[in-house]
Image 1 (tube, rainbow, N blue to C red):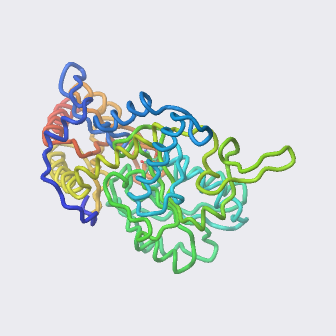
Image 2 (cartoon, rainbow, N blue to C red):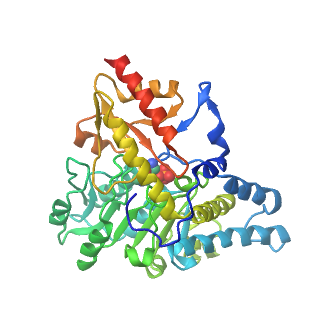
Image 3 (tube, rainbow, N blue to C red):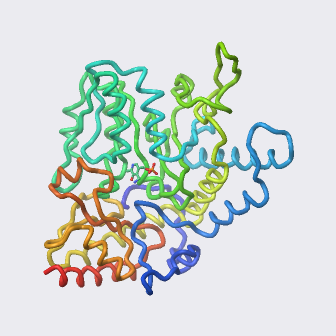
Length: 415
Ligand code: PMP
């Protein structure tokens, strides 16, 4: 990805040493070498993340926050230490990190706790035509209930956002803006800085869906200027079922709880309960302690390689992959925006995406096929589905060559 990054010194990028840290990459699939190119769906986990989770369960596991015994203290220290690490990553205070099950839950939290009480009949929520269903349906549920409207900005033919079209949709009825940072289906990197500036000029709150940016673009949340940023650990070399909402403290402090249960309260009686402070107010029940520890370890892993170095490596692979795919007969790329992350999405003459995915699997190439939870975007491009190869730090030239070779075979089979 060619977006400006952290400024951390990029270590020499030793791809073999990086691959060696991911045990699953040496699995044999269909009797041969695995080319794992389904990273936008979920990334693989390095030894250090596996070890951190293992260490948590072997040596620290207990419930957090509510006991005085040694193990409970270790669990709480590990869990809250992870919050410190994650807060440091986004350059925010620890109180500005709400742990969730991932991006989806974080967006729902904002939809129900922040937007629902503010939204009225006739109001508009402005999205883009390339949003993931997770960044459409929660707003739709709340909008339906309140008689508000969902508005989606147009996407241009190359898969970039029609920024002029988006700007033209801003008006006095726009009460909230949500935008995907990097499209999971196209790879498009949206001009979120410009969009946030335009929204701020009108006093409209903005949520950035960072599911596909967290592992590729450095996020300085205060500098970004958004009100909310959401992400999932599993797309950044961390565990599944864990993620966070990053939000300004003053905003979180003013938001009511949305899930009730243990840990989110200060006092409970049958007449009335009072709420814990943020972020605990939004974290009802026993949390995923190992998830938090694993996410912090994953961010440590990214930092150990250098996000700049990872981004440069992925960008080089993107260019190489684009050239290799251009030589496959009958293949048409979907998503060719100038500012693009490591996503190669395409359709092929004579075959449904599902068939192509099945052929690729026979050659050990793991890609995703389907609508990628972006049905409105598929409709925009007039296709039911695409094949999507998506890149991560551990992918190499061999993976791309394996993909291209299998695609040439598929093209011959489909002809
Ligand atoms: N937004 C985008 C852009 C995504 O790619 C995804 C995951 N595919 C999500 C949201 C939802 O993330 P999760 O399933 O981890 O909650």
